[in-house]
Length: 431
Image (cartoon, rainbow, N blue to C red; front, side, top):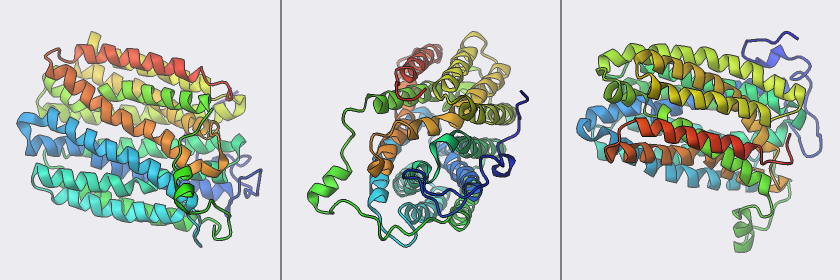
């Protein structure tokens, strides 16, 4: 069997993404899956590009400029505060979208809100000229922008049949990692003056969010029944699932796999400068080469894992393979602390991340315990993306702050990743 190494374009799978998606069970879409796939490519690319500017290398570089002596501590505080609020926001917006009844559907109003508010927040991050202003803009951005990813994720179980979610997840995941890789490549050229990147990301996010709505509109949800909106009904809408072990094992697997990776990945610039000993100027080409290597391997991982997962009707094995790449990658800087090892780290972790993102979204939609609360439950699962972003900087900064340096970070990262791989295989309802 010949397997493509190209990113799975919607038009590249005529047997999967060509026919309109009629109602299959409770799956119902106004547009065909081909247009919906194109919409996923657009929105995944732009929101992750923008979010990578708001949370990634440009933020690290801006903090290093505004607080050079306390940059590790300040980054950890920024990420922790913003992450806590983002976690709550994802849960909130997911539940609210379940209850929304509008001519545009349940999810679309919140995609528009997230795109507009996120673009404003990025501009404010760009103009901030001190740490206090920067953190206020950062928190505001995270709180309201989170409506967009929460609503987009809920579209998968709403509008994509289960047997096609691996490929749809690959399309969305591919766009996400492409957006992140492009953001890092561009950011590597602006580490000394990152402000302009926030303005560029603002325009990209706004245009992409509105384009998604135009390409993949939804049915009106005005006539859909919903729980009574009294205090009890609202409380039920925010309740955590009960008797759903697979749901929580899926949460644990995603949480720990990303936590282990983020402990190293989110400090890549500081590892190059403070552990390997490069100057910021010397680190810039390494970051560029790392971004390019990651981009290539991410595309390979995505293009293989998503369609293969649909074909073999398995989600757990591709995610386990992804975890092996994570594990090898985080050990490289420990045994070989050189700029070359960081480029190889980016390549291996990119391959794993591509495979992970291509399948993980499909897995998450298949462990949902209640179809009436998809947005809220996916909001909970989505916090397994954001909470590791809170804990990872605190854990890494804590280890370094205690004087142990970076080597224990790599070892602890590996242990956490191994636990995540084990958790995925505890899921019984999904193969």
